[in-house]
Length: 355
Image (cartoon, rainbow, N blue to C red; front, side):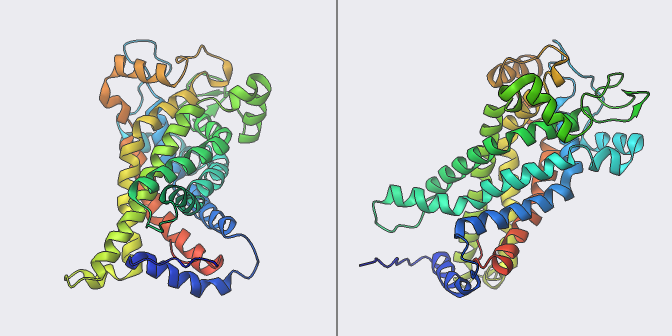
């Protein structure tokens, strides 16, 4: 006889009721996990288009003036995020300088990576919790949620690594071109390595093979695992805490009972947590992926650990958090929009309950 899941937690009870209400909307007979991935992919693709300028600024700050005091691959052009934004805006304009670089690769990357990271998370939590609870029907613990986030983040990073690498390289080298060479940006006086995202993929695959397409994958996996673990756990737990508060008699209980307020608060804490925890791996990932551009220069790093050690040696510990401000300006607003969009797509388009 099939067992009945009984839980006393308000958040779980609410999810169970909403699942029952939404089950009739799932009329396409599409597996639930596919619909969850679809909702996440659509939300993240939208945010990729919206926040690509922040990603361009972050990548340039992370890849400029590497190994100061040692071998430096690119000059120090930008003092901070604001100076970088204003410089690019004045030299190339908003569309060409900040919005278009790496945009196609960014959309593909977030569709694949974001869809898997966020869309597979609920299923991963259920599977891991079932495996760890021995059928006791306990609500998932924070540890289970963190592990689920690490797992989906790693899988998403591996699947999206080729598009991620192309995005980083196109953003790092972007600038104004005159007479066939860059006249602005970090690669001034150098011939552009790639004409487009498609050409970049073909070139890298042809000249560097599989290892070239998956260059920086270890750092990318570490970054994605940390981001997803912090992002999804913070979002999930914040909603649970606010739901608990809404059951009480405090003055903010009515506000916490309002679903949009819970989503907005959880999205904010999710962005802060993800940007802080993942900053070092994010920097290493950007440097490794942007290293040895198109095979025209000798690589600065032999791998992720070598990048960490050299960065610490030449630039200090705080260098690992270079680009935190633009990273948060990308992740924070991205989550503030991405999570509500995912919730909207889940409930209104894919027949799923709120997250």
